[in-house]
Length: 99
Image (cartoon, rainbow, N blue to C red; front, top):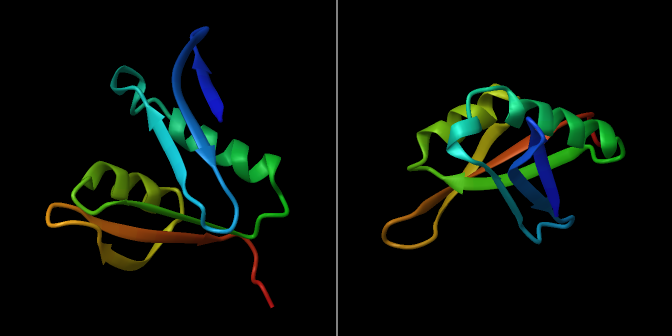
């Protein structure tokens, strides 16, 4: 679990797991649209250079999340129905071709 710090305050947090065990990500609304999420993704990619493929899920209904991840280079690869109200969109980002 990591905290995201801006203006000397915790403005969000994230965690991630290898092998598809899930992740969690959030930036509080007052700090969204300031580039914090993009910087966080760049930080992760720099801190973990051996990771060649990132995968995440987000609700299709959350258009802002979908737009954000696509802007960061993630590509939609699938969707799965989680419940009657929520369909999850699966995104992947390949950093380097895996042979």
